[in-house]
Length: 391
Image (cartoon, rainbow, N blue to C red; front, top):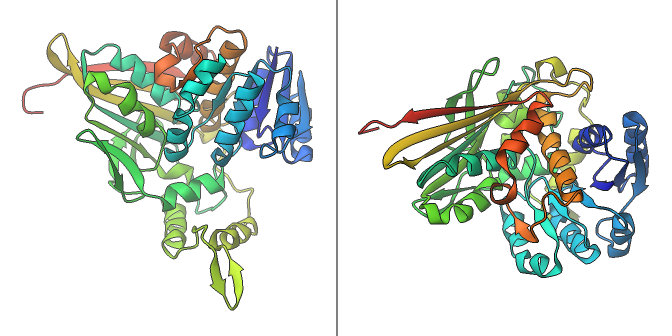
């Protein structure tokens, strides 16, 4: 079995590879930076092999995909459409970690092409989006009607004010600066980024944590997938993207000044993209200061309200876990990396073979998925509460 990991030299690509090399014969770590991919391949061992790829070059991408049984796209979501088209042409099953709502909506338009080509694509299969979507499909299957889906992404917080990025900084800056999308009263609407703060109780040791809206892909697909069950509301909230609140407020202030903008600005006769300047300045800050892996706990909580057996009910699913005991990986990074590693195996073996473009809540079987996560240290709990009149 050969599985390609695009962005294989990155933080999440490394953890995906750690999972895959346990039983996959060939794990191709493809990255624009061959040195970075080679370092990861050497570290994870097994069947990992590094290659250089430019996903914007169709020929380069086709060469990497040749002979593969599945492709995990963990490169920046900006390239999702190019990679999807390359996988379609090569006949290789595709999955990614999300498209930050708007790109995901564009990807869904390729459904007919993938169906006609006999190729399966699964969009947004990390923790959020990903685990939350599978939870949603699981809970919705227990209900006759779904009124709302509310997703909360919680993690133990960094106590420092470090601006070292917990994951892809370009994506974080987009989430901080672009309006969040929510689904309310049957319509998609924009809300201010980082708005609608709400304290939410996660399992210990996370506990009560402040959450806020963010632009995310769950909201792009769940209202469409559950349309026939009458869904009226869907939103996604997160705990400061893994930063401490003081650190995030600094980035929020810089974004409000316009430094997250990608539109060129004339400065003294020189054209400058403000974001390029901000990224360069962030690189000059200390990057090694992170919260200890031992404190890295993660919980994805999905709360679905609806009706079962003619009675109002609220269902909650929590998928919770901590650091990997031997890989030295936090629960947060592991819960992003494990889902694509699990489902890529299913795609490669044709255990999941449904041509077309799908969201996880539509095609990922919940119970086998949660069982696979349990083998990696994540428990999934179900809570049911009857809703009283007036609540």
